Image 1 (cartoon, rainbow, N blue to C red):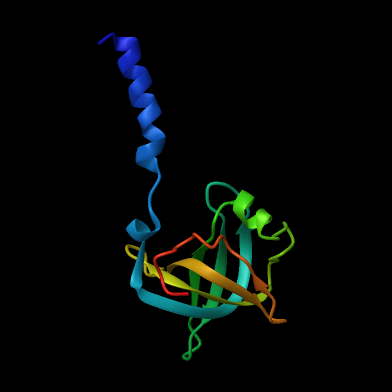
Image 2: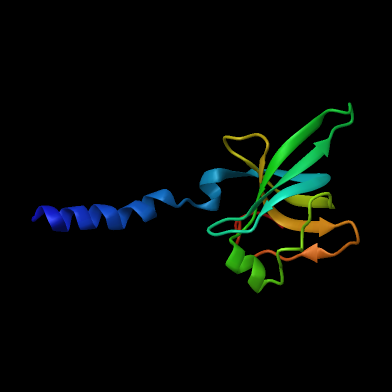
Length: 129
């Protein structure tokens, strides 16, 4: 095989190796419901994120990383850049990360007024919603 063709094939395969499935990152046997203050929303592709400050019963604040679907999917489901603002009080349901105890793959994000921000219905489709 010519070196140029081999290099092209290797480069073409790199994005496939970089992407992961929901089940590879999140543990479906560990559902979580978190309530706290949102900040640092990153509306981007391939996945969007925001931070969630959760205050425990003992007053300890834990920062969770909340993963969402990509910006295109969120916007197709009605999200805008102002849907989630720093300081918003939200409730997140999802499943906990396998290798990061304070990471969650979100299934729902509910604002203080009760509005549920929709996510892609295929995100985490194996998990109970």
